[in-house]
Amino acid sequence: MAGHTSAPGATVTSRALALLGAFDADHRRLTLSELARRADLPLATAHRLVGELVDWGALARTPAGDYVVGRRIWDLGLLAPVQTGLRHLASPYLHDLYGATLATVHLAVRDGTEVLYLDRLSGTVSVPIVSTIGSRLPMHATGVGKVLLAHAPAEVQEEVLAHLTRVTPYTITQPGLLRRQLARVLRDDYATTVEEMSLGGCSVAVPVRVGPEVVAALGMVVPSLGRDRTRRVGALQVAAHGIGRALAAGRTG
Image 1 (cartoon, rainbow, N blue to C red):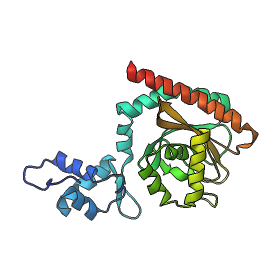
Image 2 (cartoon, one colour):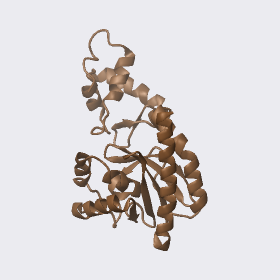
Image 3 (cartoon, helix red, strand yellow):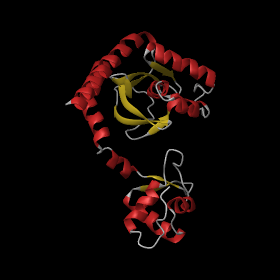
Image 4 (cartoon, rainbow, N blue to C red):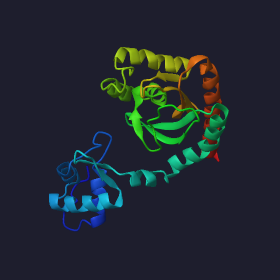
């Protein structure tokens, strides 16, 4: 929380930034009163500045009347060197993967306890897809999410395991079962889902590594896994290795 922004001499910019800084991984939706309190601003000042931030696109108001970070902030975030570099370096490998499989392919990273989708190429086969570039989805219900969760710190895993919401009738909501799946992800080096995020859609995903560090996940969504699972995993791993090598070269270059 930004403190003392209501003190004399605080600039309009510092007050607006304090409102944006009121959001964090544990506070993704805030009412106007909560925003004012966390930014240490008078309610009237917060109301005026929040209105301007909404008009600009930095914040968005939900149907329930609270506020979330706006899409324009995401668009600016994509210009940051880390995300821009990852998307740029991964792009040719995503296109090669799409060309080889004609499936919808995703590049994603972990954002707290959620999956953040950095890039997506839509496949030619009609499959229900709920992800978009910039969207966040539950880790436990997506292939890329399971990969990232398997390699996440223990405290992140425990937080996710404590809040296994059901998205479809097939979403894994039993902590013990998900723990066993995560262990298999570490053993087999890939993850799968079967209609756990959307009915009619299955996914398979692999980690993207720079050295021993898992920095992202690469996945595809298909109508069924079937007999092509091994071929799809292999294609994903080849692309993921290429992305990892490109990232490593970029760090040392």
